[in-house]
Length: 196
Image (cartoon, rainbow, N blue to C red; front, side, top):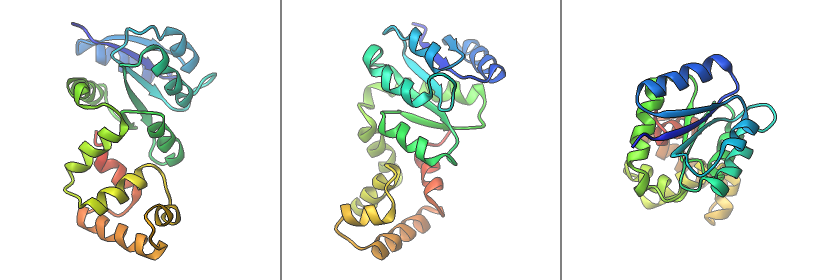
C-alpha cells in the first residue's frame, strides 16, 4: 500500500523538490505551503507528517499540536536547524518522532521515512524513541539519564536539581560522556541521536 505523506514547507522550491523526490520513491505526497494549509488537510489518512518549523500563518510547532487530534498514528518529522535549539526541543516535547537538520536531499528524506515507517510499531512515543537510540550508544544508566535530560533541553543547573547533584558534577559528567562518544557539545549529541 502506498504511504501518504503530508509535507508542510513554505519555501516553494524546497516543497516542490521534496514532493517530487518522495513521489519518485513511491510515496503519495500532499504538499502544503504553510502550517495552516497543512492543518486543514489533516484527515486521519496520513502515515507521516513532515513539517518545517518556521512558516507563516501557523508554525510547525502548532501543526505538531494538531496532528494527534486527527492523525494520531502519523509519524511526525520536523525539518529544523539545530542552531534553533529552543524550537527543536519544543518539537521533541510536542511528540516529534525525528528531527531532520537542513540541508538534506529528497533521497535522504525518503530513506529516513522508509526506515521510520518500517519501525513504526517499535516507536510508541518520544521516550521510547530516546531509549532505543540511546541504547545504540552504549551509555551507562547515569549517562542515559543525563543524555535524556540534555535532549529535553534542560541546562546544567536544572539537571543538577533533577538528579540531586551539583552543577560542576553535572558539567564534568557531561564532558566525560561527550569525550567517550567523541563529541564536543549538546548539538553534536542531537546529531548522534538523530542522524540523517
